[in-house]
Image (cartoon, rainbow, N blue to C red; front, side, top):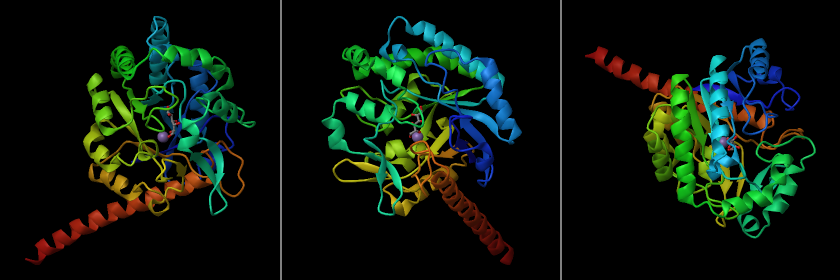
Length: 367
Ligand code: DNO
Ligand code: MN
């Protein structure tokens, strides 16, 4: 596996590239041009700027997260074609500087959803929390106010300007069923996957977070059968997934190691993180350690290892530690520790397999 680390860009992230440099085994940054309005083409000079910053620190920029999808594409409006044309242009621009993987998601209106960004855990750290009953009984506008008014950073997917038109958007989605959303996704993929193929790019859809319907909006990238269906919409190596253990892991029915085995050829990018599920459907993000949460991180890594996985991996959301001031979920310390945990498991898997092979060889030599 190739370790990468999400970085929101200079002046837009409390974490600096020279800090990331000190985390063992990180080879590249996962980046985006967060200030470009959704639907616009990413200008080549802005892309080159990030490449240069990464180069100066010896990082590659192979993975982009995310090139977001304009709502008109998800809604299937006639105006989608112009946004799809811009998307294709962005794919080509990114390929021209060597980008290999583009992560995106197809969630209507909201990206990830939580009810509290800084909930206190027993150890005194804070983490992102989802209270199921609260979401079920809440007016989405209240949540938008809470999340988009973060004084320090604009949160991707929750940009205040975009959310101003929220009422209209909700209205527009009234007419969009799950099957419509599947059709709109297929239309998008049929347009862009050939461009990705021609430019050596793998598209990697991120699962819905959480993977169930919220606020009456349809959600489809939620489970193993649905991911199977997604991969068949356009059956190409360039049509892949970002397998996120945290997003899928909030639903106890999702067997993530099994998904790794089934979808391995179509996973160019993995997000690995843990969370603790409660019986009432609430969950809180925890350290990456298997014992701290409900997701078996060891089994997931073992599944990747057993399949000879060579794709990109990043730790995903972490807790906020030692009073650090950072983007929700994207502090330095917990993600750095998460990486060391992932390496710890990976290195011992490697070692134990080699030792087993050696033992077999030794036995043969004894004869
Ligand atoms: C949560 C995060 C997501 C992700 C976007 C990708 O698990 O990884 O917010 O960045 O959904 O488009
Ligand atoms: Mn994720």
